Each structure stands twice: as C-alpha cells, then as structure tokens.
Image (cartoon, rainbow, N blue to C red; front, side, top):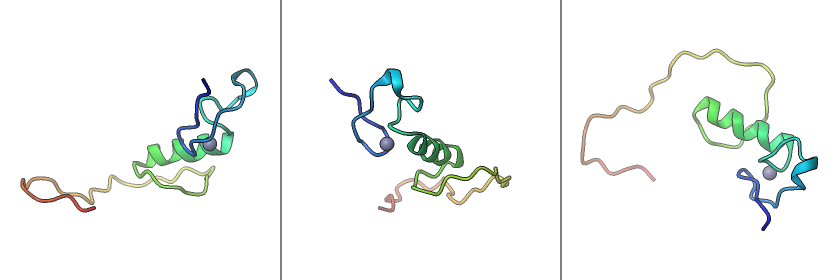
Length: 70
Ligand SMILES: [Zn+2]
C-alpha cells in the first residue's frame, strides 16, 4: 500500500530513499511546513527568510450563530 504526500497527494517515493518523508519531495515539505507555521494553509513560494510578524487577529470570535464564510 503506497503512502501519499499530504501536500500534493502523489504516491511517495521509496521511504528509504526519500529524505523528505512523509512528503514526496523537499519542496512539498517546505511548502507544507511553511503553510502550517504561518497558520494559513495555502500554496506559497518557499522562503528561507523568516518574517517576524506580530500576532494577527483577523478573525474575531464571540458572536454565536454566525454562519461560516465559505
Ligand atoms: Zn508532494
């Protein structure tokens, strides 16, 4: 049973020769980790520089009953 890359959903290369496990490639790993670290899951260009951003609170929770934006 082949495992799949959690980022692009492609079948993973052989694990023994896959340094980027559990991703299919270092690129996918960088993109995926970067997305998680920024808290915004989207495809972005991998950046080596770490940007220091203040805590951004774009979403205000408090009112119940609101429908989620889709
Ligand atoms: Zn991948």
